[in-house]
Image (cartoon, rainbow, N blue to C red):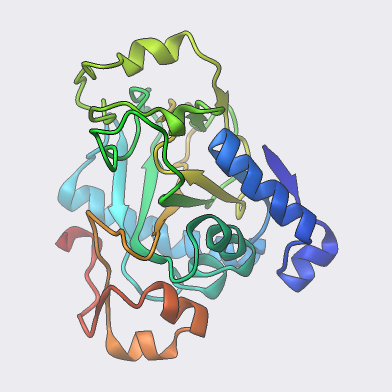
Length: 278
């Protein structure tokens, strides 16, 4: 579902209470929500202009790592990537706070880029079940936030998602099928072929919030330009496996108070790590 913000919501950077309630309901029930055109175009253009040469150097050094002509790249925790509108936009954090509770935090700061010539990924989930011995659905404990740096169209490889409950599947096996593994409890790739899915089209600077357990896949980029999403992962206060962010002390001290709260559990005092240093 795409929510068009009112001019007042954009100007105030604050959701109407009803809009906030709808967004939270949609993530709980359908697994994701999109806020259209949240971040100003000039900021997105500036970030893209800094991102592109960094990504080119990363590919030259490390190559593609998530499929044909497709790469995940960690971002350095530095300007312009750590603009307040990216790392702690109040419209996004309002929804995240409602879903994950007080003192949630971010431990993943990266990007996903399908280049021209990229292919389909397998339908997959980004995480192992939290309690694999329990055959019951659990509330959200980890959320992915994406921000596209270009308009996302049918041509340039939109994210395809399986809404309406895949994030609540209480399966007892690894949902990551990118390596062609088959879940012994449910053949996710085969099941997804016969289930409803939708592609997420949106303007540059939109904000996507999805339950990390939601089934999804990348689709082919048939255009002549890269289709980059910035990606962050927010977790409940007690959870945060799998990643961390290196943040210089002086950088942390200059962050807005909300960002200090969100990134308080990361490697503060560390040198910025460049993408090819991971």
